[in-house]
Image 1 (cartoon, rainbow, N blue to C red):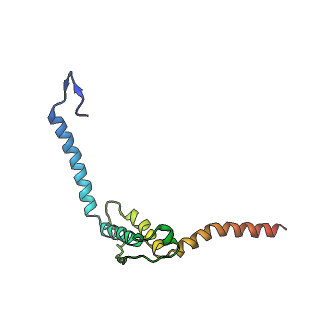
Image 2: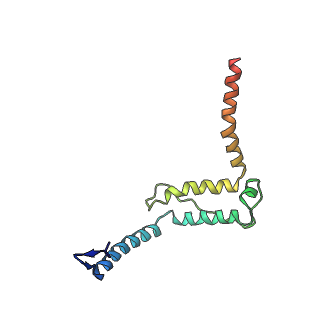
Image 3: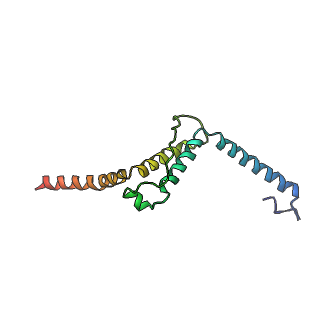
Length: 130
């Protein structure tokens, strides 16, 4: 680091400032890259949808189908394949989470499929063995 001693003396203040400038350039580049990402508006919109869906109800109430108390905004989908900082990887899980929060029966159907299919297969194999 720039604050360690060198040749028996302390590092100069100029070294610390140059380290800070190097770090600042990286941060500014990352912020600018994130600000021009084509998926950023949709990501903000999806997060606002999740906030609206969870307003005034607990996750358990949402799972059992209690309607949201706030109007849920609609979002325009960004077409896939656009170059950006990497928010494209976060959009699909956000879309899925919004869909499950809007349609709580999806969670019940997925849970019953995950548990029911192996039980059904085991039942059929056991029935065939007799």
